[in-house]
Image (cartoon, rainbow, N blue to C red; front, side, top):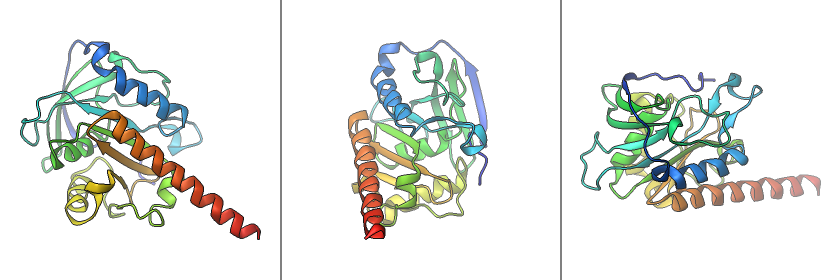
Length: 223
């Protein structure tokens, strides 16, 4: 299994004041829902005890160029916290997947998945929110749910994963689905949308479908 929660890109980081809490209130609300569902968090028995999952939201103009679509993202290793406030977020101001570089500022260092979030934002200017969670239920049944899946050889937080996300989006129904599974990142699922509600709803619908499918299989097994 790949080491979870470790920054693999070159990070240029400057400490700065946090955003106003109001700017991330809705994102933080959805992040608490995901924490309560154990889709983000930290557990000594999972992923070698590292925190897992992260959330982000664009804060810049719609016309910002690729590689400079500013977004706020939960800080690295904040998984154990039930509630996040502005002190626990970082603002990514630029990113270069090919060069494996991220420029960020704020009171916290950005998530190890920042490059992947940036690539998703570069796919379409209408995408404003990205949720990266860990769901064994969805991940194990991605094929049955007909979810797009990245190549298992693409490691999280790397240029390879960034390229794979771009390829998948262009070659499959990822744009319509608003969700994909990370084939080489144990339990990794990414949903996205024009709002937190849209990205969150897609994710919860996939979880409900996965749980229903698992229950059906269990029922068949018991017959």
